[in-house]
Picture 1 (tube, rainbow, N blue to C red):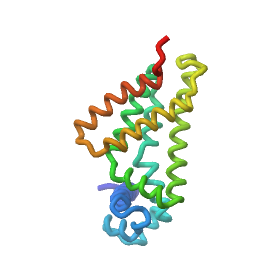
Picture 2: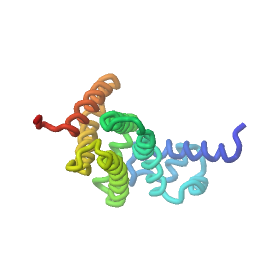
Picture 3: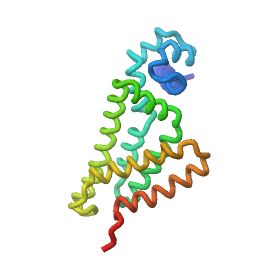
Picture 4: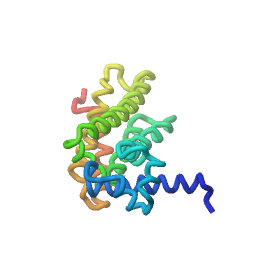
Length: 200
């Protein structure tokens, strides 16, 4: 039988899962703590034992169920791996993370247009993730694997921006079609960012 601490952690994960579902269905403004509590099957008061507000719950959903955690995990294991190899893994991980929770991502995008507070939070997270990638590229630039003339900030923005655009266009494809698109972009997109159009 799980300990009290394990039971609390299980309940916390159930609340986050339910919040993602309700936010996706009703949007951030339309969803309430009561709605989420009913989805989990707990009292509204118990919800506040885990999360102080709906905004904190949304931020937790973004932090723990989206790309940021996976990005840090991928970049913690890059020793002995080339830049193209790491970037291809990043792109695939990013796109598959978006695809696996596509309805929630679409909800966030819609809410960002209507709610400036949500937009601010999401943009902060995007900027944080971008900085992590830029720091990785700078570390490889410092050891000469990437040209010292390269604008790694621009490269990171273009790569992940193009990847996100691919998600916007193709996120309703079947899984086999999606995998084909992702594999093709991970190869050609990374190659283009690293080498561009010009061939000396």
